[in-house]
Image (cartoon, rainbow, N blue to C red; front, top):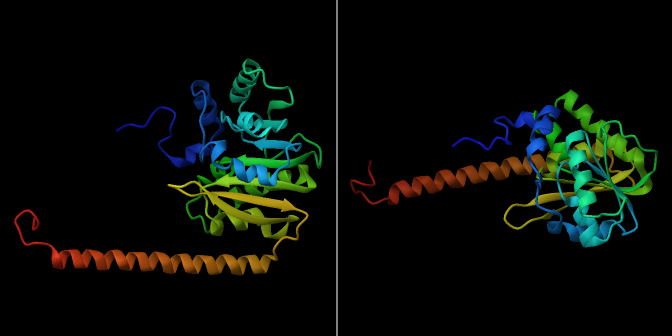
Length: 260
């Protein structure tokens, strides 16, 4: 079965700006990691209604629109590197008669065109994951990719108010994502996470400024502990599968159909 024309044949293609320009030409909308309603309760808890919000890599997601219509947020600046999708979302906003305080603009998330401390909250949903699609080993992110991620985090940290919050929504588990978000203790935020979604858990990270960041050594030790636990769990699961397979072989009925 061939893939739809909007889907790449290799994950690394998601890191290509050209891919997104072509995809946005024909795709009206798409939601990564569930729509806003799935994690609405978490956003409303952490972000006050009068907050000035910056959305990174908004794409053709309806998250910004839904944050206004469902939760009453009125100051949302949505950005994307693609001029194609920004123009499309601007037209949609006009058609829906959304207030001008909901704006879309072209911006590079590694060099944001906003003043220091301009926002109460920065939200990214799947944008960092695009950079990481070229990584082969999630435990060892290559230096060029790590530098890009840190550029995004530094810019997010810069445009946040002293008590602001970065929200990162992803399928990447804490032992992979949390060390990147901590940035080796370079930021003034404390990283926490929660999950949402029933059939498949997604992760909702909050990086709250003004709270002392975890000590870098402590963070590394915590990550090493989690990794060791994960490897033991994976080994145990593999052992259980092997034992189950062995039992199935011993108890399988000896018939022509089962012995083929």
